[in-house]
Length: 403
Image (cartoon, rainbow, N blue to C red; front, side, top):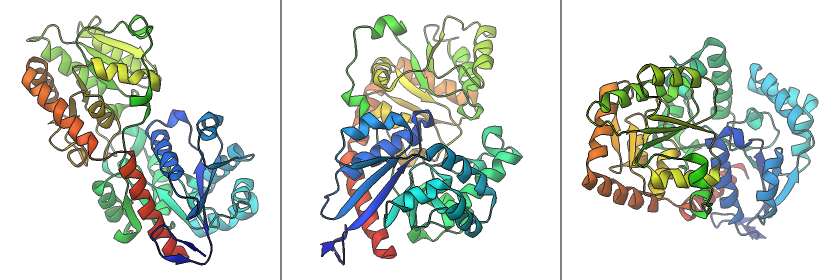
């Protein structure tokens, strides 16, 4: 006999599967999956056996260093494609069809797991035979429908189908915050006791990475600047940020902004606006920044400024706080839940409010010191060990319910 994670007696040791279909391109979802891998690695093997089934080869080196049993998936790409196609079907129909048609579903079933965890809003979550824990990172297609990347007719329908199934056909749902829990409940009527907040933590690479001597030469950063690492999606709100910078420079002509992100989506429009406003020397586009270099930006920046419309919470504020970088953030959804009094807040719709926060921190050394101190204190309240303990508690509760 063995024990459940919650200490109750079980008839046999349980086997938990962890599905890694997400790659590095997925940003926050990839980072969340990394945190979950580390948390699962801390579980005593006498309680449960954990099997990690992965598709993207980018995971191989990380899993090689983990005590977890890792199984590469042969049918990952084809199976992912089929799972997305089946999203259009009713959940019960999709599950029946997937059992017969999707080789990835059969491949996962062959691992004989009692419970599967899906960390990245995976369409496969409700199409497998076994009980599953879903993850819902955000429902912004409902709450910010004006942005085409979330609320266009087709994208809305696809996301709505995906998330309704995730919320109501899984044994449990992981969310980033109490705000995220409320969003799932009010959107889909999911019972409160099926939803578990497991907030993001700052990724380990921020403290584990070592800055190389080539960093300064590679990026040629200004002496003092604000930093915003975000892809150029409309909801990231770069255009208003650039307008706010132009307004702030009327009284702070030395203010500069560094933007990290690939040259896609609204990149050209943001660059064009910077040029039109005479900011070609004040806005620095550094392109994609690898994880190993991010800490160098936070350590040098006057502050992170993040005027995003999406939430409920985000990972960059956590990155900034753990690096001792002040945070200026949109007053949206769960951001106060995440950052508390360790940030300056503004309405992302107001260029004036964004500019006001930037100007205030730029000139106030005392405020900068206070925000750094509060940010470090805030970051210390929720660390990997806390994440690990919370996940173990959640797994114990869910396993007790599916036994």
